[in-house]
Length: 612
Image (cartoon, rainbow, N blue to C red; front, side):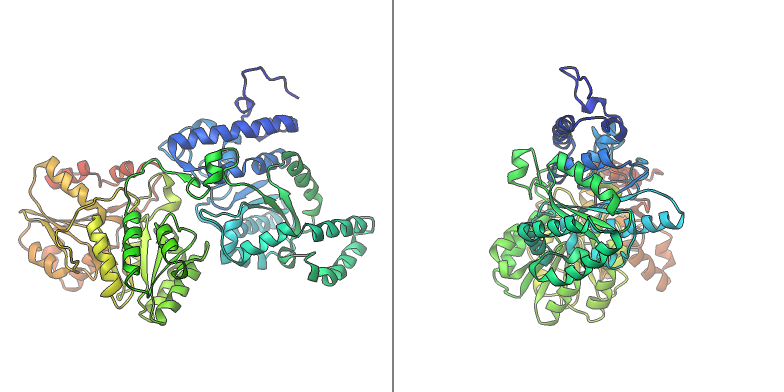
């Protein structure tokens, strides 16, 4: 036991996981309190994932206390449990600037630390990645344990079951299931109900522990043979569960905040894990130790510093208005009810709201099924997660030309979430589908008009994409939206074609540069309004095409058309300004715009003619 000074925090003396291995359980408990205070302070200053990290403190501390990371590999399922891990692995200083330039990423990243072994920004990847690492270890004849931290919300994603189905008898593989009944919103689906059943079946669990104690007195081979017989005989009373059917040794439920118990359990599983994979079912409270986060675990899942009106807020209020007069409108989300602005819709139309959990592929194909029966499904999804369902969009929506509406939130530069959440690829992906209408609003008015159009006038598939940013309330003067480009400013010499939210930067750039270009708002990216474009392209000496996405989206549509039509007279005048293909680092969206030469000041330089 260390002799701490009265004013010295234990956390001040922790430089790496080895630093905590000599602590007593009471000292570890104090350390957990200090870690919670640190996480609250850091997220209050920088934003970030608060509730989920507060709930996982004891699990991570106990794991570092028992196992030997980085020799033993810790793999996280997304980064919502990893802040304690980062604070214990020599990153306390850079955590003070969490999700900011020069600070720590909000997600595990091997580029940041040797204690991180796999990048994780999307849920349900940990088991597959861990299994690959475990198999590589065995092929290399190495000796280390793989410890996978899995949130219960991820159990709604099919990739988890693909990994479990392939688990076999891999050794030294330990899964710590953090069951807090939540993903971002409350966890949903049959697996959520099943976990609840496990929590309530303490009688059968006690019976099972009694049988296990008896079997422990027998030789291992004899005990395992008898165990298989008993398993079939008592399965009807709930003594065994689905995890064991997949080959795991199930242990739990375990109080995820009882540090002493966690240490004992983790130590005890080491021998079991020598011959079969183990899953430890821990039960935690999201937001633990911070009363506000405990009582409002959905809204305090993460902290956003900017609280102004966002595009998803405009979508949320408009879709309720449209659904009130059109009973065929339904909304689908993949565990992002609040993030996508659907809380009011869910309250107003609970029978027409479907939260499918973290299951983007399923969400898209289910929407296709609804559309095939005459409904108007709106699939509300972040751009970074839309990528997971690309095959379903093509095979199940496009091939049948079904009227599925994709509301793509957090498109473009991701801000502090960084490279794992970059929304830069959706236009370049979706423009490959000729029948897919793609829209990008530059204001609240345009978004509302697009939604009215989507609900009434679009027969095929449609995508409306907008960024994670403050929305401009006003925009197009006309209350009725149409598919044509909007000529915002009539000028001379230079023609600027702007897509989506970048329009506000273009207008500010004109003010800064004191130039007078013609500005076209390409609010419908596909089918692009070439009639309006050609009407202005010939009379301007320069053409600048701006898009907040990688080259190949709007730029690809325009360039392909000009090339196929052999309009080389126009091609030689066009300058394309797109985002870099290099995934953006975690910093503010404003800084990312500047890095990609899309800030108002950078666009002003382009208008003046200065080289970037």
